[in-house]
Length: 313
Image (cartoon, rainbow, N blue to C red; front, side, top):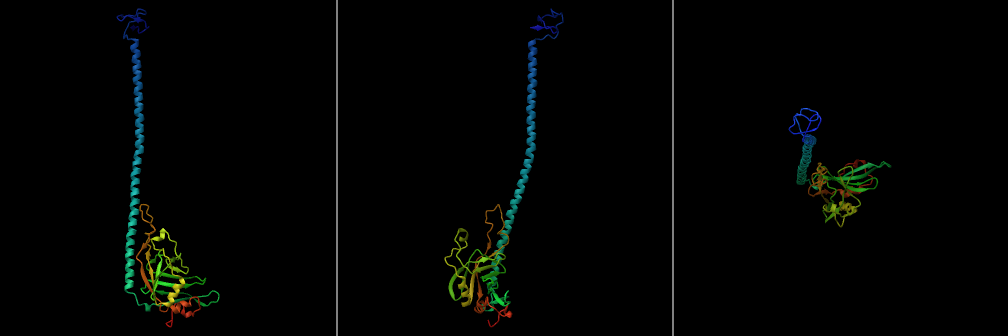
C-alpha cells in the first residue's frame, strides 16, 4: 500500500496525484519498508558501537597487560641475574676457603713432620719457674712452671694460682689444639695410656687440663670425637706421674681457623662449624728436672729463680 508523502492518505499504486490533497506523489514508499529500514539501521549502528566498545576494551586490556608484562619480564631477568651472582659468589667463596683449608692441613702436617725430624734431645729442655709477689706479704711465690716440648712445637705450663686453682695448660704457636677432643697421656715408665678431658680459656686459643677430671656425658655430638670413655686419669695422678717419670707424651689433635668453619653458606648442606682438623700426633716433654721444680709451686722462692732454673735443680 502506498501513502501520500504530504498528508499520508492511502493512494493507488499507479496514481500520480493524491486524491485527498492533490499533492504530486514523488518518491513514494511504504511505511512498513521505512520502519524496517529504520530498525535495521538502528540495529546496525548499535551492533557496530557494541563491537567497537568490545574491541576498545580488549585493546585497553592488551595495553595494560603489555605495561605489566614488560616490567615483570625485566624484573624476572634482573632477579635471575642477581640470584645467579649471589649463588655463584657463595659457592666460589666456599670453594676458596675449602682450598685454603686443604693447604692449611698440608702445612700443619709438614710443620709437625719437620719439627719431629729435627727434635732436640729431651735432655736439652729444662723447666722454668715463674714467681709473683704475694699481695699481702710481698714474698716471691712460685705460681707456675713451664717447659717447651722436645720438638719445639708446644709449651706446657703447670699453675697453682693465688686462689688455689690448679691446672696445666698446653699452647702451640703454629696451630690450635682441638678442645673438643680429649687428650691421651703416657709416661715412659708406665705402659698404660690414660685419657684426660681438656677445656679452652675463654680469652685465648690455649687449652688446659682442669684439676677436676670427669667423664663427658655421651651423646651423638661427641660420639664422633671419641669422648665415650669409661675412665679418666685424675689430675692428682697426672702430677704424680710428672714427678716420678722421665718423659711425658701427650696425644693432641691440631686444628686451625681460617674462616672456613664460620662461613655460613645457605646454598650448601655442609656443617658450617666443621673445624679444620689434622691427624692426631704425640708430643713429648722432658721431665728430667720436674721433680725438683714442680713441688715449689705455691711456695716462696728466691727472686733470682724467677723465670729461670738453676743447674742444681
